[in-house]
Length: 246
Length: 88
Image 1 (cartoon, rainbow over the protein chains, first blue to last red):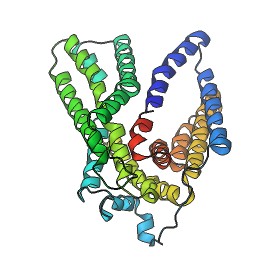
Image 2: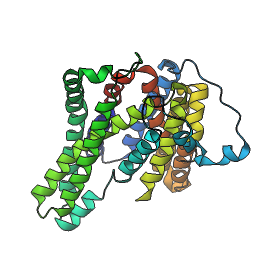
Image 3: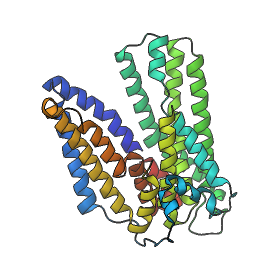
Image 4: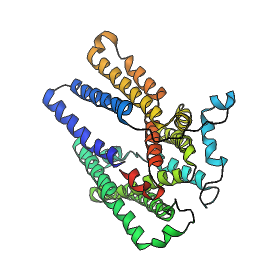
């Protein structure tokens, strides 16, 4: 995720620089083409396989194959593998769905209408929030994770399975704090009467980055390794629906 | 959305690399469609701008690519270190 934010922080800057120098957008497409060719070569010739023991799955009927939502059955089919409630997977999937639903609020449009922002203020705001989110990802989150491991060593010995040092309490708290901060900052942004408060709320919203890696990590921990692809496919369906809704 | 379930099961059956390859090739075709449209729009119009996203979606779009990458991370990490790798 930090890699994504690095790309979204640097990419527009480089693109606008090139467009300014060449007065054309065609070079941008050529750069994108070269990057994609490198990506294809990497996945074809370099990237090793991670799923060393792929599994055969039971035959599915024609109706089930045609039903695009049949993949969502994994969220309710089996009990999660750790000692958590049966409803953990659907609840986490719902949290992910709702988080994606409000991931891109019309913040800049609102600021343009209320505070008469121009493209300059908007791009500055977007750049600052991206940098803060990146700082959150690569600086604050790993620090919090290490602090938690030092302060709560007992949490790592709660479960008897040796393979799973318990990161569940940490993940749950990160999800709670992340979603809570997101909701609070959206409320503050809506109630803000001046630019300072509005911008501060926007910057604080970078704390919402705490939730996403925890939700994904926890989802993958709750199913068998040979079902991770199917589970994340189901989550991708929910993400696609929620990102189109608003 | 239409292909996410299919590609999720495919990655469990055939491996993550298969889906990643399909997705990156789809992305390459999308960029090629945009580039051809930008250069020759006066000759061929903008029809390729509709074909590009369609191909991208059929060949494991961005949401499936993200899901495959996260599945790859899940395969190669222990749950205790998965959070750090997901961050990066």
